Image 1 (cartoon, rainbow, N blue to C red):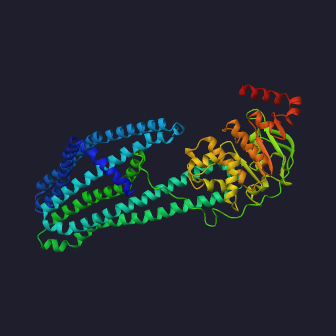
Image 2: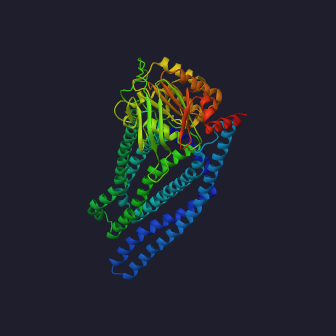
Length: 585
């Protein structure tokens, strides 16, 4: 955070240096604010000493009128300040927008694969508005404090120099204490923002891959990883709260302690010739001017100032420290023992009927299929016919309305999330592959509860065709940013993860749809040669023909058989094959 501030400070000074005319205009209106502050307390003191206490009611009322006039002057000054402020902050927003657009276009031309950056919308709208509002608030509050303090201190000196002896020391001490807390406070707030962003990114990635996480029984490792991030954010929040209490202490010393000392020292001040009206005027300066100005200054610098630095750092692409996500305690990163494959399950669908709602038409009706251990089954059918619903039933994410889905003779849904770890029995890779921020090695091993030797990870990566991406990223220990990967690259990571997992049943729900035909063939061949059962929702004729059997879903009945058998007896399958050939040609 300090580095970000040091880089942005010269830019801010250059920005202000080019707008001397606006700054002079703001200074002029601010001097009127000083006059307003000065007249407010001085008028009250004179109204008491020279008016009411002296028995001159008219004179007292006249001095109160002066104090009231000061309020009018303050209102005029505030209006002028806001007009001048607009001339200062609007160019800042315009410059930030131009910078964001220019950088985004340059990046789109330099890296076309990363051109679809959804964060640009946030930078153009929300973040530039935050920068403008925060900058305006800082200028407004800092300027107000300086000129209010000048007016108040001149007023105290005019009433009696002895008042400065009581007021100035705690005021200066509190301000120095507050300034000492700014750097660590900014650093703690930056840590908290980073932790909050990391936690939000984790929740977002888990939400996107929730189907995958639940189906594969990876809830425990994902919960452990998320718990680490929650603890980091809580630690950052506690540290931030401690420094916030220090800021409250500085406000008490600078703003409230002078009032207490003024009351305690009142007898001494009276002996020094300070009148009752001067004491009341001093209290007016402290409670009506200095204390509110101090409170606004500390609150704004502590919140808006940090927010402004963070947002300007984002808009200027000043890199901040990354938040490392350590592996949960007890999770080995490079275990030495390979996981053992359990027995391959027999998959049975017994008169399965399923509908999304009591009044909805069934998506699957009376489906009867048995998939033998080690078999390779392809599932085909028109879009929306129930192929993904079938994979969810097999993975135990859905429970049939009628009939049963059984793995190893037990209901599939009963094994989802409890009992024996489902990731040891089955793994589901959906069309939108789940990849999280972390090392590539962590991504590949998260379905291996007992770990896997590095040689097995390397072999699975090569088998499914991930080797090129591993080399491009810089090895298995390279950090993975999901947004920087293409859909096909994310699918390759998910496929390698499933390949190295101990699950003997692999379900690919169009998990190769973003790969070209050659890459798809290589990945499916790797799974066909891997021990276990393979169920593939196919979207190409080549993928279906590689299977031992093909299941055709048409919404009413289902047909299952080899490619040639279905060509002979399934009109829907013949139609699908014709469409695939037409798309290929």
